[in-house]
Image (cartoon, rainbow, N blue to C red; front, side):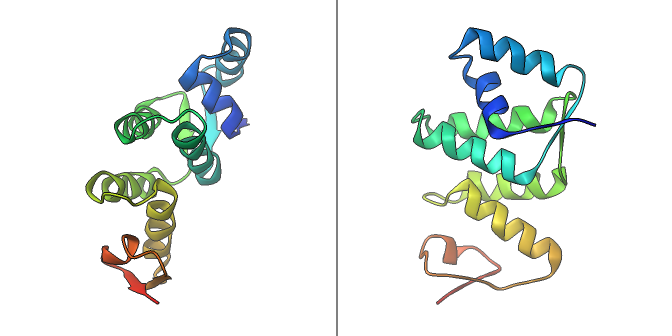
Length: 126
């Protein structure tokens, strides 16, 4: 199965470049694999470069989870991270993914200097 990087996903979500958006959708076609890293980078770009609000970031992850053409790496981890992201103000989606991956692997607590992240179960403030 082919895979996509963050640039392809960003073009699909933003449609800010019609030519590239069309090419991105054509490349995905009926199915493409999305790694955790590609998804995290996509959400970071949408939030920082495009200054999309958290609600839009949540929708982007939800759309990716539900899209039959986009096959996520370990969707259960993405779902767990999304749940954390939705319920914890001021915590980045990337940190939620790190914690979800750590929990699944059985490697907790996750040490952090981030006081907001440290409020989530499975973390330890250093």
